[in-house]
Amino acid sequence: MKVTIGENTYTKITSLVFSPQTDLTGNKLPINNVQVQIHTIDNIDIGVYLYLYDDLDRLWAKYWITYAEHHDKETLTIRASSVLTILERRILDPVMYNNEPIANVIETIFDRALDEYTLDSAFDGITVSGFCPEQSARNRLQMVTLVIGAYVKSYFSDKIQILPIDDTPVLIPREDTYWKPKITYSDYVTRVRAFAYSFTPGTPSATDQWVTDGTTTYIVSKHAVSFANPDAPAAAPVHEITVDNLMLINDDNIDDVLTHLSTYYFGRTTVEADVINNGEYLPGERVQVYADNNIIAEGFIEGAAFTFGTQAKSRLSITPVELINAGNLIVTHVYHPDGLEDIEIILGTKEYTLPVPYPYEIENPFHDETWGYERYIFRPETDTITGTVQEGQNEVEVEYLQALRFCDGDLEIVSVDDLSITDGVVAII
Image (cartoon, rainbow, N blue to C red; front, top):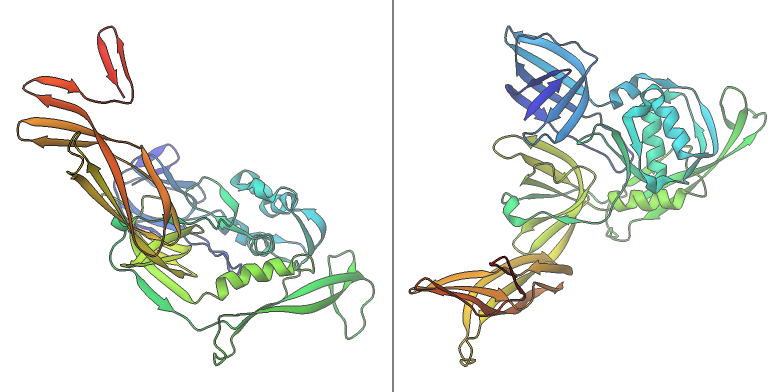
């Protein structure tokens, strides 16, 4: 890992701490940080950007330096935060939105930092209606991302990215997972509740709730809508999550908001898993991780605490998790010699443990075998195998053909998919 500040790149770094988080419930909007010690006599000012790269020059973070002090003459301690720390310091006036395009709302939130964010095209045409009080730009971003079903990614990019939540899971290979992930269970959330708001311009009475954007006064009406957890046992203690005073929720979007919240709050299982992670698995993404021999945990990464060595490793906090049964897929590569069809030679066996049901496509390799003084290359009859894993044991057999035979310095071409000769050079496919 290395750090670039201004025109200088520093490779002598230690005590690197990087643990990005995100929140898909809209309950908070984490400000992510980097802390690092740089072995240098340079003095570095606060208020400039720090860029964290790996050895392949991939950007991990672009953060605003908030602290830079020498621990001793040759050791500089630096702390840097995402651009969200700037939004935390900006206070926005109250505003009433009426079908305001989300792109305009986000532009106002970022104001002078317009080049520091991207809004995914999935939100083209989305509008926002309702009231926002005087608040920090960070809090307003938190509110609007909840009502449009977005999350904020402030890592592995030079921009703050406002992204849709993607339900498509990525399977983390078993060989990249340290054994054994920790599974914990929280109390059941029995119900999620939110209030839908509407506003009428006018003069409020003593008993009315009202708001003002500084120009117009609005009388506030609201009513509650709730979703019960169908999986909570009848004897489970009452535990309700209520979203109140979020006045961007209205009759048009409250069902979507509650559906979104119930997805996360009704799940009560969390998994912590240590995995090899060179930036492939990031907070906000849905993943599948091997939790036990035949159990796979599927859920969203909430946080990734990285440690650095030859490869980066991270402790993933995954929630809410659904535990999925896994099936075993056994692929056997076989060869039947010509004229000896009753003889079956097993060239190799591959075993996979995959979630059920899991559509797979696996490439069949060539086999290189030496028997006595002869060397053989075998090719599969099909390039790939496809199917869907079911519970229990799934067995697939792949037929192989002899392609080449090498003996006593002579190469015999037995069978190929294609062959061409150009200027005396033989190309075999």
